[in-house]
Length: 168
Figure: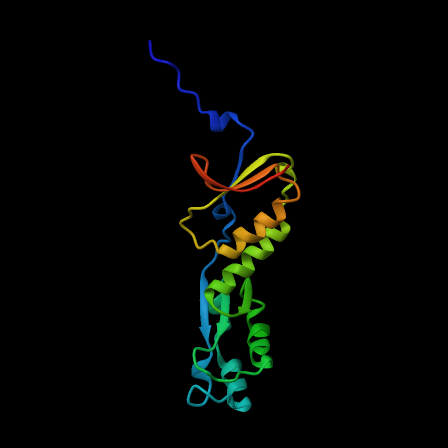
């Protein structure tokens, strides 16, 4: 007679956190302002304001927008602020930076608001592999948030995890 297979991980107190589960739904858009600059380098206020006024901002409805300039232009802060104000009724969020910066900011907010009380005194694995772009910074922020309450923190999968912290 064959022995019954017992899933010891499922029966343990071990908790797995998969940040991919918190991935915010919505299209990501990289908005490059270089085409609104004279020769891609110089911001002329009158022309720039005209581009902003004429642009169809509704196309960013429910999107996450990363504002950047792909040239070495010196762009004043007010230019990004002006665009952000126009995006505000449509976009879920707009930030200055790359798409990676956008993801990092999104996850920083998610982790800041994450209720981790269910992990108190328990061993926790922060899942490592994901199909969605979970930034490394999010893993670091989560581990810092968990350290004061978790019994231990590991990284990876339950079958092959890397120990990071163990309460003494």
